[in-house]
Image (cartoon, rainbow, N blue to C red; front, top):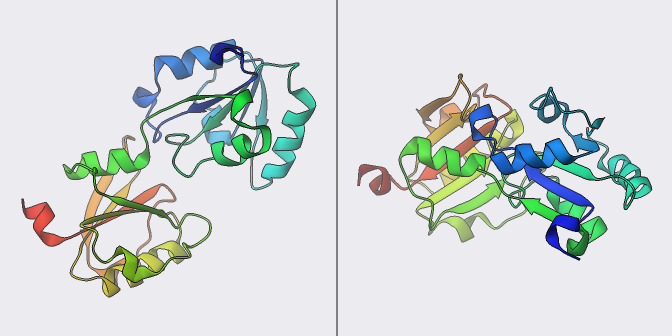
Length: 214
């Protein structure tokens, strides 16, 4: 089966800004007969003629609907950021298998966060505290010069504050609404992070001080 013949196309929609949607993503959406994704992602394509299914917390229900359409309706699954980084792509590929899924990559919020900070991310460690908190040994991350954590909730920020305190010294950059007009990058202390009111679209960078000073 050729890549272009695969019945499911998973499209990365980038960090949020319309300018970060690729031509490949737009073309795939134009060809779709069924669009599946979070409501805010569906809204990125107001002119698309495809039928739409909004995905909320019940991912199993969306997969069941896709099961009933597989092989009959060309589908596009919209995911936030890049499909390969903590997105809906994982359960879709796990359920249907790689052979049925074509993946269109995109800019991730982690890439956008490091770009906003003026840093490369070649040796960064990446975690997600968005939804469930990471089940890790924090000391495994102590040697890392750069850590990015997908946040988005008060619980996540409190966990990141604890992580930062246990692997200090760190400079903490809170990156919100990346690529959107409201984008802001704020440096805070660990004690301030625990009580911060941040956007649901937030990436926190924990950076060893010498890295930012270089």
